[in-house]
Image (tube, rainbow, N blue to C red; front, side):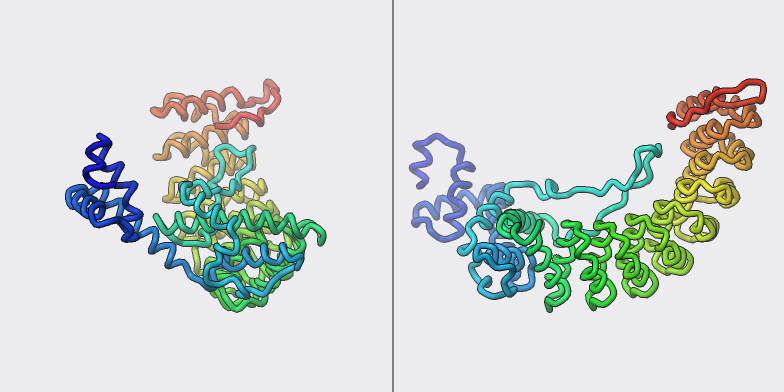
Length: 448
């Protein structure tokens, strides 16, 4: 459209320019239209920014690697293999260069994905249990396979969406070998044998998403033997997703021997997901001796998930001595999950002495879960004097759970606390106390 054409339309000039930007960038405009666009860009920062974004998009797409990227190499191979009634095809055979011309469904999905915000593909893992109030902190997933930002992330999401389309086509074509059997075999073979670390990493992630116990052996081998740090981390994550006890030996080995901190951290998490006591020894070892604080933190969490008293000594030591506040916090939570009276002493110490508000808060909660009268004195001290309102609130709740009449005076004072929630739960706890002259059924359903 020329400048004269524009004047006859009476339209918005920026809208017209936007329609011409792609052709302008590709140098497909005639001289008159090209001059019209250039003149507008000289005086319009908004359209100049849009042109820059267009250039970045093209450069970003062109910069996507042609080798070693799972979304571009692995899944097109599956589609080709499925369409030829074959179980798998060699990676890299016939899938380089203009791969979109061979799989139009992929490029269609990729273009559609460019219109979807990157955040639409993000989901979280809720590792909390409904019966606990408040819920323990939510455990995060490992970083997404594409560690990109902004425009690059949007491009990666487009390719990822294309992957899902290809995967669906593959599944429909391989059902004759069992549910996803060919896909599973291919991913395991890639994980163990492919020379490209990025491809092996994506194979590990894919196996975790499939959650088939038949993949445990391949993932265990990768976790113990793969030279790439990220492949081992994703193998640990995948074993946790599958939740098969046969993965415990490899996860325990990784906790004790892996040199990469995140691989140990996700091995601890995986053992907590499996919830088998056979992982306790390795978790306690990690809690007591690992120099990576995130590995210790998740070892504490895992011991709480397993809920076995054999983890108490390690948790008690961590609660009193670990220099990482999040490890101490999770150790307190775990002791509350195990609900063993041997946890009272370390929890009482932490409630009165820890300098981390959340550790004291969860220590109060844990003492309420254990319901041992030996925790009453420290809870009364906390409900009256702790500087953190949430700790006072949960101390009041814990005293109501223990139902010991000795707490009456402290709770009456707490009923005048400056914080409304502390007052509310102090009054609730007063109604729960037993004094020996009356008997009431215990309430275990109401919590702050």
